[in-house]
Image (tube, rainbow, N blue to C red; front, side, top):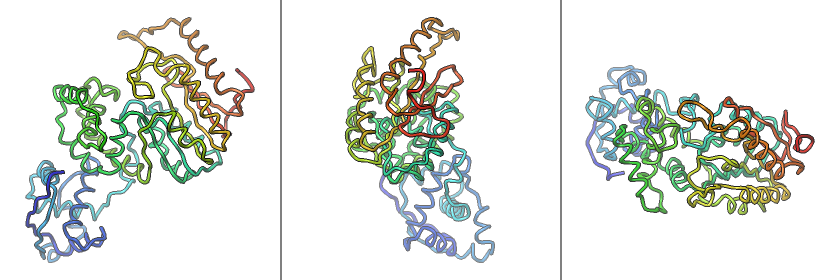
Length: 419
């Protein structure tokens, strides 16, 4: 953020004292800054500046008119944000915002119906969150640590954060994509600054193309970058299906509301360790300790749609191929033998691509042949190792298989049939 600017404002004395108590500080400016910061994190539709809350907290006219003058230091972005959302004088707007946050504090309940950020790789099919939640609820196990090795869009971590925290003591997430990891680290440490930067971006096809060109031309970076995180999030939230490649006009209406979910991510990432590592090295790092739950959702075998392989290099024709999956299975087998567990996601049907007319690109015979091949390979890697599985029928006709090293309600022993 830019350097703080000092401005003299008059705030109702009783309101200011309540704010200091609520935010646990003797510093008047700090109390106001915290209130404005939390106001910025509110859902977009709730960022209304009016005097309703002030009258609820200070119903007595005398209390509202007894003022304290302070020299307030605010980041310039805060002032620009206030001027953008209201025509009130800044002093009156600050009073209204402080009252709003004391009257209805920022809590997770405000966001209980929100979803995860729309980033490619998340578990969007509605059948998947239900199935994963059922496994965590009925497994009757606890772990010292969970490691999500391919936290591409944090779909598992975000959709089941509360359940994980009940059965896991420490949480680790990992991905090899620096753009995603940088975004998660920014949300974890600088959620307000990131949201402000995203809110300031012009939602248009022209700006989308400009930001996309900047991202493609960007040099490698090692430090946390709010600018890069904002650009990456903007491209994903305003693009078709969250791929970050092509602008989607309908996103103009939903972009601001999608930014609301930054707060959900911020809360879910509290005390979470974040790694940007090769998937194999990440598993090797944790496989020797016991009571670890590996949550593994790698690029699916014989599927497309991934820009890079797991090592971060340009994707070859085979992508994350047979040898990679075989190596992954061997690592996971060793981890399980060391008193660890796994939840592994795979797809046992080929990708059902269609052309622009909605016609399948593969014939039924070709699809069936590929399905049998994929299923046979997965059986080779995971069948008859004392594992369990459940197949989830997706609405598009594909089948996703969840394999675990532990029993859960409705699980089928992986080895008694079909392999």
